[in-house]
Image (cartoon, rainbow, N blue to C red; front, side):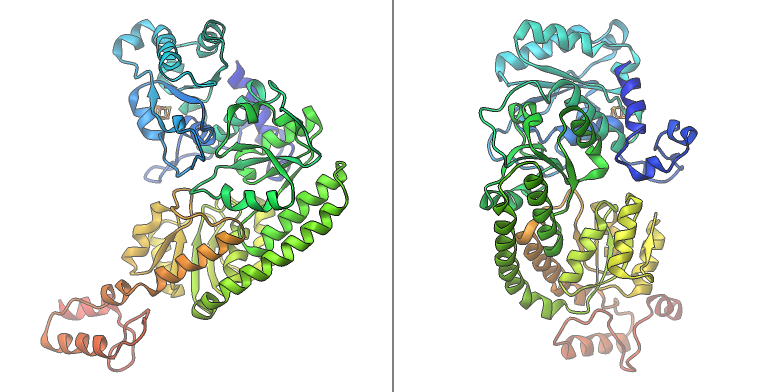
Length: 497
Ligand code: SF4
């Protein structure tokens, strides 16, 4: 019942422009797209809920279902913690055939008891999965009963895989913390500078690149939902003055409902790129002042922005010279791609195309504003199209998620992971320096010179190859023959056969 009610509310999201533009009938159909055979379907709703909540680092995350659900979702992002590590322990009820026949509720209760006896966490999140939902296990009732017994919050996360897409699962996770966590505790003290970050998952420690900026301004992060989050902080998040939404695709519903329930205004921001980092800091300062913070916050923010921008431009300058005019194909999954586009342009790179699969209409407009009308925006690229685009556009590097890395490698193009599995933090002023460093390292890597040389098949080719090796003093993106023509691999293969 909770799931049905939440789904209806999510599909009526007032903060989503795309949703508002739909007719009543279209809105009832939800946002899920029909899965096409052969195409990757992405994660399930359970996976989405797990991704959104697992970064709460001090609680136990217990998956009620077959062990494969746990294996599918455990720690698949590099969400970092500054303290507790319990969130990285994989807890599952690991239900078996007998549980499917007789029900898994007793097993769930026993698992909860074991967790409290061995780890004594401040709270437990219990995740529903397809099998346990289908056999009718009532996790709400078990959580209620166990919570009364053990005296700690036990939160049912009702987002079984079949409920919808990964993104829908993110939103169900948001509904869960709204209904069961936020507003259940009071902070030790309050200040006019308290804010919450929503939809920030501290991937590879990005939160720690943002936090010092707020601290320099005297702004307190009352809670982060959910990167490096603590249960008690999220429980007292309703006392913040402002909410800053980092990923509107995942948890916008938390911000809009907190505005409705607690009167907390929100703004959407991004910390990718120098300009967007500065704009977001200014936006938070402005909104805090509107909520009663002292006026001098705006002046102090301007001073900080000026000093930080001067420092970061100085650090980026040497890389700008090396990267100037290099061409990038950006397949980010689309979320805040405008922000990444702006960040790349600041580094002197030219964007030959960008994906907008998950972008909102607002995101697309921003991309057009930044890149002009001849922007090549693509909704959904097959691997072959991506490969052709790489070759046709003669990009120097592809920035994408891990799933498309092999396309770039097949096209003998440098590749950098900028999606959620990335190993480097790219947020804030520090992040842009790291991003240009990593792009530079990828493009200048000598391996590309080697892999672009064709395998020799006769003496003439060997001479050719040695000539290229001897004459190369810099990275040549496309090896050329003696006539100066770029190699056409297919033609060579056809000639040789
Ligand atoms: S789709 Fe269902 S069975 Fe598969 S991982 Fe998700 S919850 Fe588990």
